[in-house]
Image 1: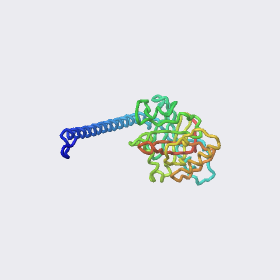
Image 2 (image 1 turned 135 degrees about the vertical axis):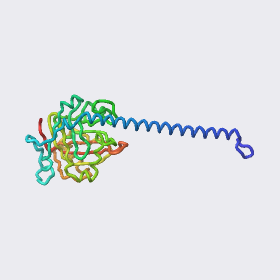
Image 3 (image 1 turned 45 degrees about the vertical axis):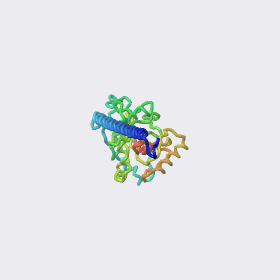
Image 4 (image 1 turned 30 degrees about the vertical axis):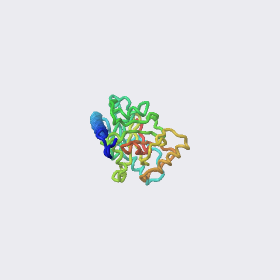
Length: 282
């Protein structure tokens, strides 16, 4: 290998060849990673553009109407007259033309609007919680997915906990704009603390009572409870809230839960809980 303490020419050539192979491998790997990233960015933007077109085709201005209702029922009113509940029940109810939506997608079971965000979407539901993670409202393949109800939920007679999911897209489509609820500019405006949800059989208002971020768990997406379990559930979600809401909870309430990713890696969930405060049967 060495001659007179010096590296031989043959060994020098071997080392040079190994170094060349090493740097060639690094270069090729870097190029492959760059190409994959470019392709993923292209596909991401392409899916976002497709979703924007689908949203435009829904034309909410024609199918959604908001107005007062003389026939609506106040649900589980609190004794405390200073509770914000009494202001929220005065808000307009949302009614939706589901005949038109079902022509576009017969999986449509509702429509949801969250004040102060871009959430203004039809809700779909199928036999699992996987399909609409990768399919848009028109059922085309799309990484943005759509807003969908948990397959276990009864969207006609709301369960004790109705769970709605959606991806958190960086362009603020689907549930991407829900991150606004963590900003003081959003939660400082009490008019934002109401969710409007309409189904083919019922128009409803929901008062937000809890917002927090958490590592993925299953307790908050439980849909059915024993009386004891539900009391523990509402106690837990109220205590976990990162924002102090005035609304109280008791065992007679029905809960609406919105769940989305809070970070790009999908390791943290943003969770919003609201209670049913007003209902108008259709």
